[in-house]
Image (tube, rainbow, N blue to C red; front, side, top):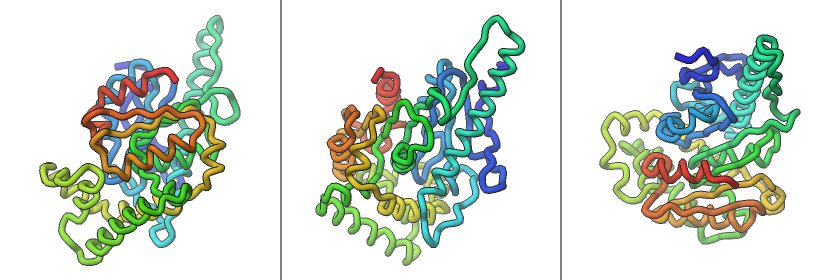
Length: 304
């Protein structure tokens, strides 16, 4: 076992709203990469990818509120993306502080090998930020907010449906609204496994049925959180000028077999973001970060 305090996968406490739930896990050492999973998911989304990256990178996996044992958010009545952003910002700040303290100790112990301390917004030291699905909504919102130094942004099928409103794509907006209305009616009717509607919507008809029962049953308690996420996908709005002003190098990734709505989101973002590269993974659908982990890893590792 390594003595490096960052070379471990167990959860670490992030002080958010005067509580200390474990809002992240970290593993490996090197340049930092922050991962944000999607709705109805956990940090295990990134397991295959992080196993390959941890030898060269400090991998930090965010746990979204209401997921992975984290407390539910307090804003169900009026969802606000700032709930997620505050968590991610707080985790990054804590990890920055830990790394700075470690480097200061190293400087003391090895005065002939001075190192620059790891810092956040105040220095040129930056993070690579990666999000999948709703995690991509959070990642893009953080990039647009500009509160953290981000050197590269990778979005795997971000479900930023607000983009349709921003660019005036009324057809896609109508399709999304039609699904949401039916889904929420199912929630009100207490339909069993209504969560399966979301999995089939993004992953393709029949994607939910073959899942093991323990995974299906684990999704059921997350339905309220997922419903909240749909609201955030709609109301985390920015106009086109904000997207066009975002100069962070951005990789946009979707699957060739993905829902046309997911493909349209990536297409619109690729037209609006000035410094992006678009990728399509052949045969992949929405859950590409687990089903096509090797291809996703190659994209992450590709130099901008």
